[in-house]
Image (cartoon, rainbow, N blue to C red; front, side):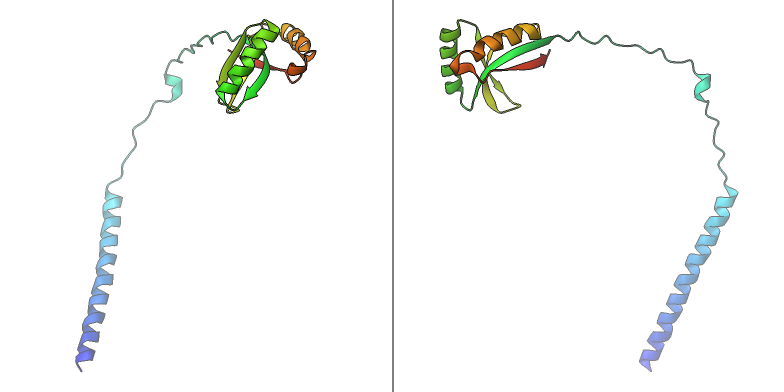
Amino acid sequence: MKNIYYLIIFALLFIIGCSSSQETDSSQNQSDKDSVYVFDEVPTQENFPPEPIIEKPSPAKSTQFIVQIGAYTSQSKADEFASFSRRKLNKEVIVSYSGEVNLWVVQLSPFNTRQEAEKSRNELWKIKEFTDSFIIRVEK
């Protein structure tokens, strides 16, 4: 008997709970119908004067050509080869770290034209220690 009372109370609470949400929904719909918002007119782009386009001059890029004669995993090996190359070639040799290849690269000083770089590289190819030399194009 006790269980029947609990069941009836539970059923009444369930029905009351459902009906109150329906009343809330209908009252919200009524308030939504009463309050209609009219959007303000926004001027179109045609009403504004066109903005002037200002082009920033790009810095002049110069292309340089570098003859690379070696690449090493340690700076000491690169410095050692650079010293040998300076003595052998009697030219300026630069050692720098290249993050692109994660190596210490040994290079000749930059040339302004590809023809100059090719001429220097072709001379290096005649020397046994520099047959792997190649040209790198650099934008600065």
